[in-house]
Image (cartoon, rainbow, N blue to C red; front, side, top):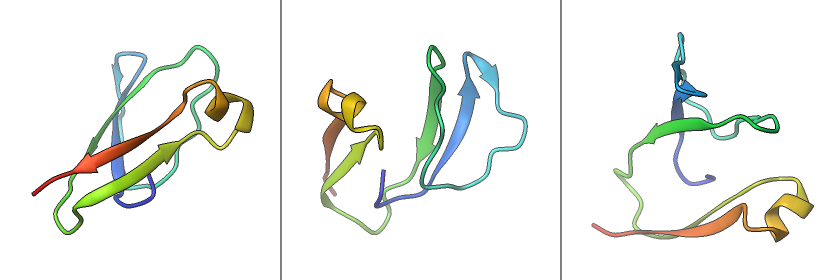
Length: 68
């Protein structure tokens, strides 16, 4: 997500020991992450996507519609 920073809460169901605010994350093949974010100052549409174009083309991209 490029509009809001987020924290990784867990990786593969295991709590992240030191959650820090970031705007990108590396997710290796077969891994899952859960994130937390806040939408305090932005409303409207925002893009999230994978930076590997083949992945993005296969659905790892979308639009968040943030409403007040």
